[in-house]
Length: 105
Image (tube, rainbow, N blue to C red; front, top):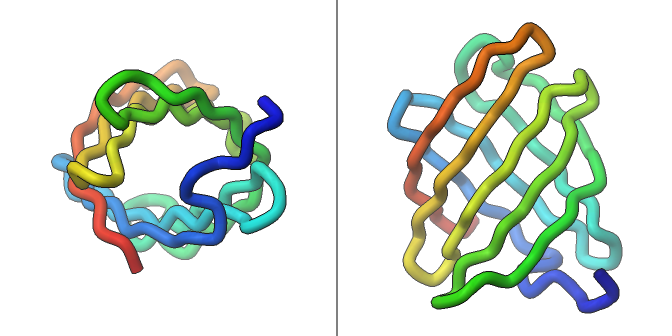
């Protein structure tokens, strides 16, 4: 996608319904996301990886990436409505479906 990500240069805290908290920071120039795990098994882990995105209807964005440990993530986020739906698959085959609240940092 050649269009610039609408939230480039911004940072967000996402609090998921399973207790997981992450800080997602979007690079201002490239489609790179920095993901920082604030709690849970991966607490303290920070990774920077490329992401893809697509604008959906009603202000929702489909955002996906593969983490440096090869786990895959797909988010359906609406930054205006402050809601995140996340789908997370681990290399071990575990699959998580989460819903969270987004706040801008």
